[in-house]
Image 1 (tube, rainbow, N blue to C red):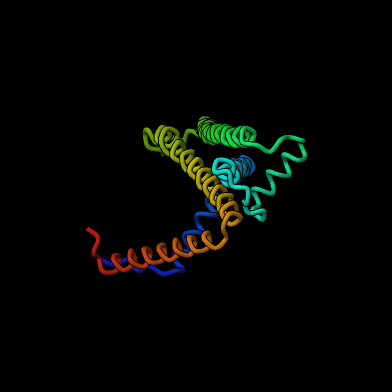
Image 2 (image 1 turned 90 degrees about the vertical axis):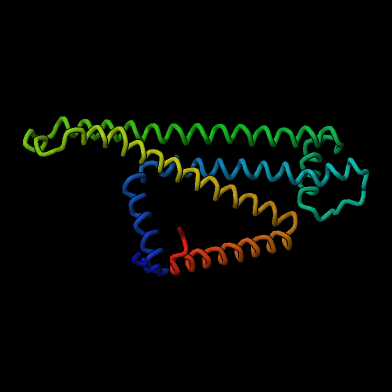
Length: 221
């Protein structure tokens, strides 16, 4: 079996080609995709805030009054309750936490709906465009086409392209969510977060080098 050489430049070239293809095929849906990414970021931020509220919640449950005043969540929640003239107690903390998670769930449903609508609209628009151009083509051009070619393009290829658009939207949402959770984690404990990120990076690089070595040695079955 002939070995396929892998170089960093080949990977960069593939990424560049993918970006060019994305711009040609999906650029008209850029604002919808960016909206999904922003909603995903906001939803993850709300979820992170809800998780961060466990710190003052545990302080109430354990009846500890010496909670770290430098904690960002303790300061933020205290300021919110003081601004709204609400008593800073356990029931209100629980209500706020549940409300944040409910809002997160609502944003997840909304983002999923938007992603489905964008994909369906892409399939509809491109299928209509291909059918319209085919019906408007000359008879001599149509005579040179294979039987079932248009049906395969519309029923299979366009649908697969719509699935790719949906996957790209999911990737951007995950990146936005990772950014939001990283921000929240840094605010909770920057040292633990940085150590976790470094550990994950080391594992990723190790596995990448291991896979490249196995490919070069043709050890995959």
